Amino acid sequence: MNFKKYKQGTASVWAGELKLFHEGSSTVPIVNTVTYAYKDLDEWYDVARGKKEGHIYSRNTNPTVAVLEEKIRHLEQAEAATSFSTGMAAISNTLFALLKPGDRVVSIKDSYGGTSKLFLEFLPKLNIEVELCETENHEQLEMEIRKGCDLVYLESPTNPTLKIIDLKRIASAAQKAGAVVVADNTFASPINQNPIALGVDLVIHSATKFLGGHSDTLCGLVCGKKELVQKIFDYREITGATLHPETAYNVIRGMKTLELRVLRQNENAMAVARFLDQHPKVSQVYYPGLESHTGHEIAKKQMRGFGGVLSFELEGGYENVKTLLHNMKFIHLAASLGSVSTLAGPPRTTSHVELSEKQRKQLGISESLVRYSVGIENSEDLIEDLNQALELI
Ligand SMILES: *Cc1c(COP(=O)(O)O)cnc(C)c1O
Image (cartoon, rainbow, N blue to C red):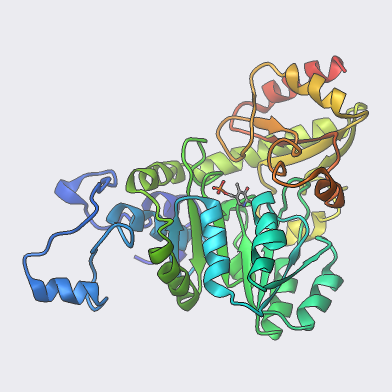
């Protein structure tokens, strides 16, 4: 069946699950095996040589994991997909598989904290040059790409201030320079944005976030051009950052409700952002759905919804952040995002704790910034909770 003609809610449920599983099982079986037995040596040899479909060893491929890879492939309209134990494994394996000493990477200053660390520390050690541009400065990005580069790495919306990059515009500049374009689509989720349709070669997800959706599973996914995904898969076979089948099952189950959850989170985030935007104790709200957001026009063009994450700055300093967050009644003060439950925290403690205070300052992450990832609760309750805590400041 070709899922292109089916909408995303249908593909989330059915992609990868069209053949009947063992004994007609109506859920995806968790195939907890390391190895796969063959009665015929010739058949085993053909599978091992990739001439015939099948599995040999679960560090490489596994039937449960393959269902998950098929789901993301359909949702992102990609040629091929592969999976990893975590989002950072997906990102680091992708970069290390595609880059070599002497190469040049162009990216943005606002990429995820762990990714930033790869750019600032790990890649330079391998004599790979990394140029990090001001995130919303498209002219600077285009200029650095024109100077010559091998890989362009993008994220939109970004963490934690939800900056927006025109993916089509930068992908087109990268194509002209002959560079591979990679986009981390974690914050948007495939329900809100499909970077491949905008010209990106490879899409990465920390499936730990919206795809899994329940804060109970770490997972990373990469999908896109077949020959690039093959290179990344070959590298992962050896580095061994493999996804476990039980974990894959959790993400598969989470993905069945992906569209329901994300549509609700889009609505909740918009309602919370509008509430905070008019509150006198809030000096700034960062949410691409707000007309006042610097990236709103681009976001409207390339996204179907604005996502479930927002951030805001409080009047005053870190003391006020403490008062607000310590008085929230039910949400969790925790790292991560994209869960059914609302999670909030200061980026200085969560996503950007790996960076020094000086590096954070350079990224424009103020001490009074709060990241707020909405869950699927009722927005009236979320707003009421924020309201009573803001009154205590
Ligand atoms: C969380 C996150 C990652 C890292 O994912 P892990 O699964 O925690 O390794 C990468 N990129 C973005 C945008 C993230 O939010």
